[in-house]
Amino acid sequence: MATNLQMSPQLEQIHGEIRDHFRALANGFQKLDKIKDSNRQSKQLEELTGKMRECKRLIKEFDREIKEEEGRNPPEVNKQLNDEKQSMIKELNSYVGLRKTYMNTIGNKKLELFDMGAGSSEPTAEENVQLASTMTNQELIDAGMKRMDETDQAIERSKQVVHQTVEVGTQTATTLKGQTDQMGRIVNDLDSIQFSIKKASQLVKEIGRQVATDKCIMLFLFLIVCGVIAIIVVKIVNPNNKNIRDIPGLAPPVPSRRLLYVRSGQHID
Image (cartoon, rainbow, N blue to C red):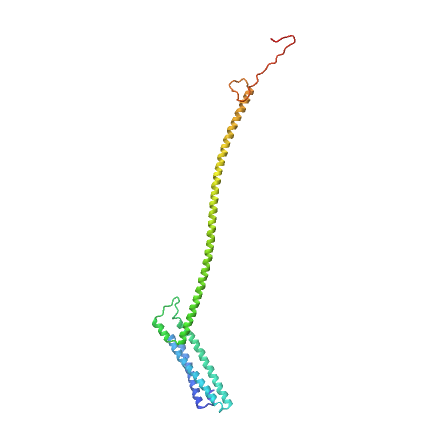
């Protein structure tokens, strides 16, 4: 398309320089894919960034020249020049987007050197200085801000864990206090039950002794009654038996009386 444009010598020179920078950018990004070392990638990316800045400056200069020559060129030529300018802007934006992609990739690799995760070794001071020298001020600021954000997030997570731990500890202490009080009440109840059982045992023993005593008394009284009854029976059956003493308080047996039959005309002597 550039060969069909009608441009002044000044525009042709600017346009040629822009195209040369675009070819250098294309070759530079192709080489960037083959570089494995992050430091070399950063240097290569800085060179490409410089070329993109130069392209941006040339495109602005190209636009100024178009506006200056706008009155001298036919409308069709002005339209073609503006279309070419927009095409170069789009192409430059594509390289800018590609640069951002590589910057993110390289930036993540560099940030890994600041990480102290499991399995990673601590970078030396020399490596940190070398790393910082390959990064622009904006990259260093972005890396620092990202690290600060991650640190803040880690602190917030730690605060949440501490808060949750305090809540769990408070709940556990409350539960333990309730269980301790309950165990104290249970111990007191057990002491009361033990005291009641001891008193009941003593009462049962006393009742047992009283029952045994009452049984002995009742047995003794029963034997006495039986003996009295036996003596009474013997006295009744054999009142003339002198071997059996009279029971105190009991009247002696009445002697048998003979009834005398007196005939008439006879007298008792």
